[in-house]
Length: 215
Image (tube, rainbow, N blue to C red; front, side, top):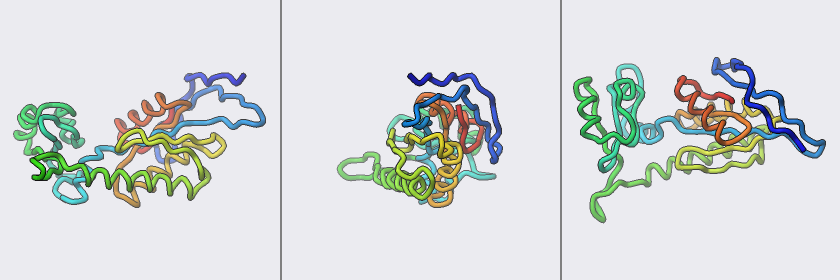
């Protein structure tokens, strides 16, 4: 039977300067099978990115004040500059405000509506999510990975099963480019032999400020 790939490998730099961790040895397969990889794609600060499409004042960039988005009694999304100050997801709004206000930052409430009763309005996020996955599907089908399985994991992240012969790292970089150009949403990708490592790789790419990484 085919052997599982070891997670011992070497770090390689992609053409975009993002670090890749290449597993070795490669999984031997039969003549009737192709080695597979998993690409995890995750939108970066998705809820704030959706808000930025309606409110330019929350768009991240040079000189933008630190911002945290909250609903009810929970911070659900944090800008990079707010995170640098120590604001984290799931902080209480009061705790986040105490950190943001002295630095000139602010809290922004998630979209909400008055009827039936004040509550968070998820439609803008759901619409953006549909556009995101439609863009991913279109990008896959326009390239070598046409027909690859796309699995939605949450409102802003998913997994793609890609045959190794199609170059999963190239597929990941194309997804990052396509989503950013078509939708203006920042996304990160991780490439690995399985979902767990792919998710860890995308988290590492996000933390490094890059677009994609591989484990």
